[in-house]
Every structure is written in C-alpha cells, then in structure tokens.
Image 1 (cartoon, helix red, strand yellow):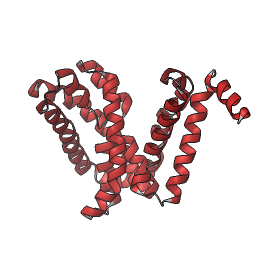
Image 2 (image 1 turned 90 degrees about the vertical axis):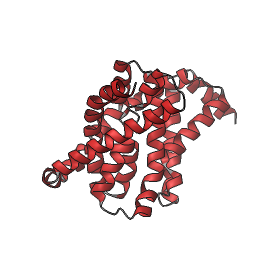
Image 3 (image 1 turned 180 degrees about the horizontal axis):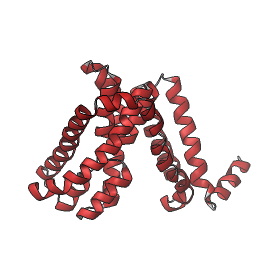
Image 4 (image 1 turned 90 degrees about the horizontal axis):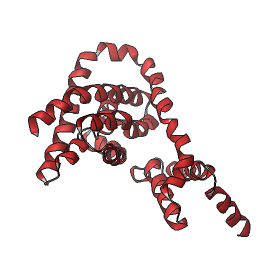
Length: 238
C-alpha cells in the first residue's frame, strides 16, 4: 500500500497522471465491454468517464491537474477522426452511387437535430446563449464549439451537450435499430453519425466497417450542413 501511495503522489505532481488514469480507465472499460458482448449499457466511453470521475473525486485531484496529461489523448481525437476515411474509401463506390439520397437525408437529419433541440430548450425558458449553445449538439466537438462561439453561444457548454449527445446516442443506437428493424448498415451509419457524431460512429464501427464508413461520412457532412443552416435557424427562431 505504501508503494501505491507514493506512486500516486508522484503521478499527481506530473502530467503522467491524466494520461495514466485515462489509459487505465479505458482498458478497464474495454475489458468490461468485451465481457458483456458489447451490451448497450457497457459503452466503454461512458464507463471510462464514470471511472475517471470517481477516481478524481475520491483522490481530490483537480480537473486542471488531470488535463495536463489527458491533453495528449485529446490530441489524438483529430487523427482518429481522419482515420475513419479508411473504411469510407473501401465503400467509395456505394457512396458515389447513392450520394444524392445521402445528401438529402443528411440535410433533413441535420435540420431536425438542430431545430428540435433549440425549440425544446427555448420552450423550457432557457436564455438565448443556451439555445445557441445546444444547436450544434449533434456535430463533432471541434466544429460544434466553433459554430457556438461564432454565433454567441458558450463553447464549453456546447462541448458538454455534444458529449452527452454522443454517449446517449452510443447507448441507444443499436437497440433502437433492432427495435425498428433497421438492418441496413449504411442507414445505421448515416443515422448514428448524424444524430450522435463520432461516439455513436465508434460504437457502430465495432459492429460493421460499412456502418463506420457511412458514420464517418455523416460526421463530415453534418458538420458542414449544420454550420450553414444553424445561423439561419437562429435568425428564424430567435
């Protein structure tokens, strides 16, 4: 126990704390996910977040100290998103043949995701800044935060909305598809990427490379379409 205590004290004073804690939490969450057969409730992202939060609260470690090391993992978010281009390339022929239907469905999905969130939050009496902040909730974090900042929202709040959306989408995507009888992997990928960006896409990628490919396509198109449409929606609704 003494050795573990001294190791923890050392890690708390170094950027290694956030990096080590994140990797250990992810390994534990992935192990649990494998054991449950990728059950909806064992989403490794959600489990890892819960484990990290419990460790930081129990140890009294500030978020600033944790993020000094965790930022190295966050840096990999960009390359990981770009890596989705690999399964997209493998499905390039199908994407080309169905591009018009894909574009139309993506436009409708992006519009519904943004407008529904804004109307619900506004109906609950939220101030304008919160309504703007939630509008790009279904877009991947860097794009969503940029949209929010440019339109007068709160980027930090937007990041929280994006995270909650992604975790929730990853949890319900597969059970919802089974319930509705949606078996086409292309449709699953487009729906998951549009509604819940990279977190849902990562979950779908475990099931099918095709779903992951179309999820990656949806992430990019949704970001572009949302960036164009949300300013128009804000002028119209607010």
